[in-house]
Amino acid sequence: MAKLTIDRAFELATRNQQEGRLREASALYRQILARQPDHAETLRMLGLLAQQLGQTASALELLRRTTRLKPQVALYHADLARTLKAVGRLDESAAAFRQAIHLRPDWPEACNDLGNVLTDRKHLEEAIAAYRQALALRPDFAEAWNNLGNAFRNSGQLDEAIAAYRQALFLRPDLAEAHSNLGNALKDTGELDEALASYRRAAEIKPDPRIAASILYALHLHPDCGPDRIYQEHVRWNQTYARPLAPSIVAYENDPSPDRRLRVGYVSCDFNEHPVGRFLLPLLAHHDHAQFEVFCYSDTRRCDAITERLSACADTWRSTIGLSDERLALLVCEDRIDILVDLTMHASGSRLLTFARKPAPVQVTYLAYCSTTGLETMDYRLTDPYLDPVDADERHYAERSLRLPHTYWCYAPPEQAPPVSPVPALAAGHVTFGCLNNYSKVTRPTLAAWRRILQQAPGSELIVHSGEGSHRQRVREYFASEGIEPRRLSFADRLPLADYFAQYRRIDIALDPFPFPGATTTCDALWMGVPVVSLAGKTAVSRAGLSVCSSVGLPELVARTPEQYVQIAAELARDLHRLAGLRATLRERMRSSSLMDCPRFARDIEAALRQIWRTASRLLCQRGTG
Image 1 (cartoon, rainbow, N blue to C red):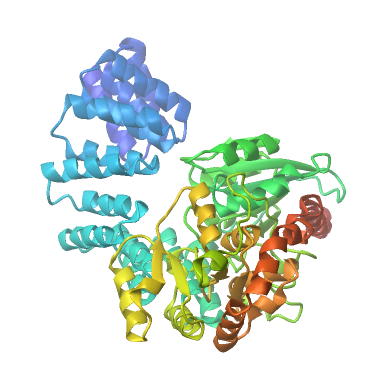
Image 2 (cartoon, rainbow, N blue to C red):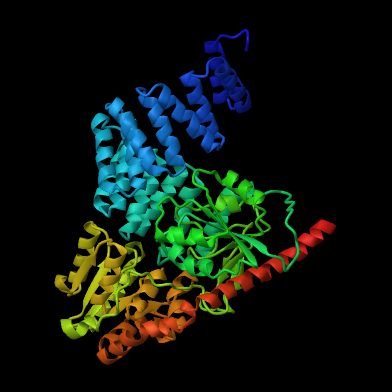
């Protein structure tokens, strides 16, 4: 270094960094700083290198120094903003991006990046404005069109989202993310065949495990996809993306004692106001900490009151935002987790590539949706006797099924839920059906069944949860073609939680979609005194309604065929006396059922975890003596 000028040393360091020789690059950067501590470009590059290595605190400190040394350089503020975003500090990130744009107003990439931060913050109108600013500066910016589509989709403007994605693909037909996001928007409008085609095109262009995982989740929604096809697609995903990551030899250092206190790790991006967060809270709140040390590995970017309550229930809470799957696996190993629990499966935010590395001796999947991950490294899946009867075909699961004795779910009603109202039909003069599930679950066979229900219940009306878009008009036209007047069909947009619950005060009977019924929405409806008619199919996912309704003593509301589904709903609509009785008693039924017995549910989960650990401990002992 003594013989090199600072400029020459910097040139060598950046070349080393570009070519992956990070240790050599870091050493040269630090030698430069020893000679010139305020060399801003060196601080910048060392900060970016620290971020590359996952050394977030060091990266932020170095990048902040660059902005203090040269506050008029827009690039330095943008670098800091990107690092802040990567670790979930979104307010600070937005402020840094705004400063970069203030210094350089003609920078479309910074406007686009600001839009991404605002989208993550759910400040969607501001995000849309930022993307429009980027596109005004650069109309052929395909990535900004794609991101604009995301903001539109998140705000429920589905037609606008689809148009933005199509414009991105017009400009860049090879933009895999736009194909995948177009698939998401098409799925939201119930166009599952087109959605699957978009996902497959995205996966062809970019063999990305998360893009390919979108196919796996969507297959559960499709009425023509049976258990065999779903399983084979999961096996293919495992072979392509997960199996190459599996360790050939695993030497765990965990104490194999069968009855000691166990370290259990829960992994999710949804430790918040989300079905996963809501159903997990009763378990974590009632865990026996004398027997289980609870770790939460959280990718949760939008934290709220439920996040606070969940974090208070954990012995150790780790934010894993920005960590790669590999680094998360290393962290789990360092924490010596005994049982690692996946709560996401192949839904958005999945961490299954961490589980593919098998960082814990025992791995379990639970809660996201009751199916299979396809992973050979996932040891168990939790289920219950309704989702998977004891004689169910186990060939469709990569994991061993472990049935909880009472229920898969444990429900804690939110404080925002209002008191139960009288039967709406008494005041309205007609029965109102409703489905407040995600519209992606509303399949063509579901619509056909609903049309027949309205025909058999004269004067009845139907409320469907759905974002804005032309798909609403398609549904209206379909119903009108079968003689259903438009006034009998209405739509409810996405609403705050309190307003969502208030919708049930207008609904007499809830209708589950199929083949992917609700779980959270089913419990919410029952809590509001609204009986739910469901259809149990051939997959565990399709039997969620059966599980919930059976737990509250109402298995007669669950059909086995579409014809029976229509019959149950139509007969219930004709029996206002029964509807009134159910409305008056459903809350008490729930309170006295296994669905709300939180202590017993926690003991059931803990017994299952202890059982599988005892099995694992014998294997660990055998390996140790072998």
